[in-house]
Image (cartoon, rainbow, N blue to C red; front, side):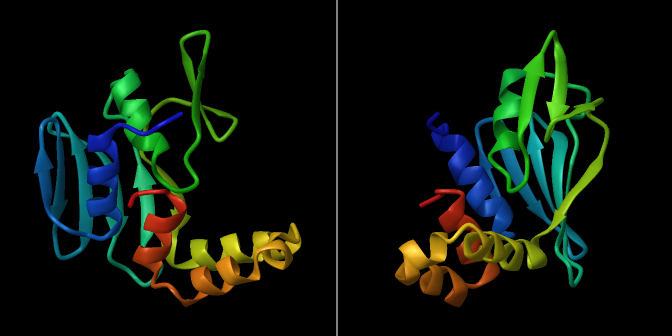
Length: 145
């Protein structure tokens, strides 16, 4: 499924901690965290701690747009069944939840590549990903360019 242009632009700004505002999306950068908003509702946070913790919530909106925006983030897979949302296979009420530490996400992703022997099939891609900053890495694997 292709990602909406505004989703790509807002998520790219969000993972790079760059201010952004377009249509119904805004990225607000504060000293302690970066906030992703949809229609003024805070739906995701990246904390500016050593781990770069990513947290999400749906702000009470179980909408298609909210789900699309959140699904564009790393380690987020929201599916809907019988009007209920499932986050990474578990029933989710939409309340704030920690998803991952982005500083570790790159290493975990590269380790999974090694474990699945993907690195052996495309060693150049593995090396390229290894050399990237966390922000560049996230943009690359989330297809945000």
